Length: 292
Length: 219
Image 1 (cartoon, rainbow over the protein chains, first blue to last red):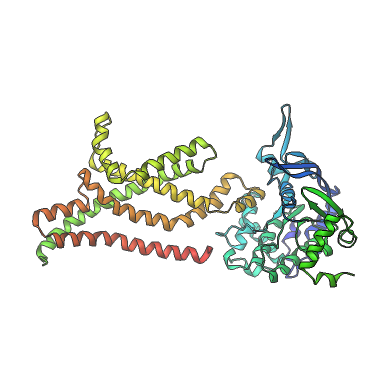
Image 2 (cartoon, rainbow over the protein chains, first blue to last red; image 1 turned 90 degrees about the vertical axis):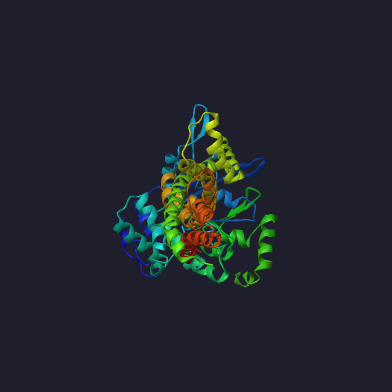
């Protein structure tokens, strides 16, 4: 735990004892997240139709697909921000959100849900920072109130996390005084401070001006390099192609295709995926040049 | 046009009445605030019956003019067996009930203005409902509602002029009495207006300062 207190300098990930490394060495269990026939309906609309998925430790999974395909709902289910109503989601073996009783499945008590998802960090499209707290305050809040760290320890860890995302110099700034990209990096630091075993990103760059996307993706790349387990809903195909271990294409609540970036982006077989990628190509003509 | 000696003679009387107005207004503000929190919470409750209860309260006390409420409390309630209340108590009850309805709506607006995503983030970080309330929701609701609450305070002080109808010797009633006896309507009522401004103008200024300061941070 103390390794986290060593500031990594402005270029994150240079410290040999970064989060990912520590997890790799200390934790033998290799499957972090297991989804087994997960389904979800809003009224009559079935938005997730029996999703099976496993995420291994240090794996980076990107979820892509058209809007309304259910990818955000799927990601939010992994943190039980949406109540999935069929199947199972297990985080490091523990069933998330539900418990089995003699009368069938019941929502688990909130304390139990929090216990299961304690090692899940999440980053939202809208950052969701608390505007009345400084950047450091945002990062330290849960360390103080939930992890019960002393003010000094929380501050030290908080500063280390801000440093990791290159924002130590903005510790005292309020969210309104930061750019979108900076706000999102603070949000990432806030999630990282809790030492999650898996990070979920829900379209983390979709609310950003195009020129601010890069700084956030850079932080995410560094995290991936350090061995953080990540599930990323994204429209950034470049990021998915470069960073993902596997890419999953969702359409109408089903996994239509899954594979390596190579398989998904260059050898797409499914017509629906081909069409989706073609639309993307048409909008972003530069992508074509990047193809090998 | 102005009778200075008389003005000097009347001023202390009005100053005393100003104190009555302030006392009644402040008491109503405190009780109205408590009522506002309770009714506002009812309006935000997940239980439909409680929500409707809160809605009914607001419907009644925002829908009926304060003057009518005051008459009702002072003259009607004792008729149907409720204890006789003094003018001061009747005034405070009437003002509190009405202010409570408005403050409840201000509170509700303040809490609803906080984006739900902030609470999702807090919950996911393991914060309890109580922690979220005290650390995330209340601090922001206070910031969001303070300007509106100060504004409500000003409205309340002005509305308190209506309590003269139950015979309380507040600022307005005292000025009326003075004018009725010395016939110096212009100077008595100008002084009356001046006294109200004496409280409300600084309050309004404080409200705008407060608003600007809060905006700088969280715009």
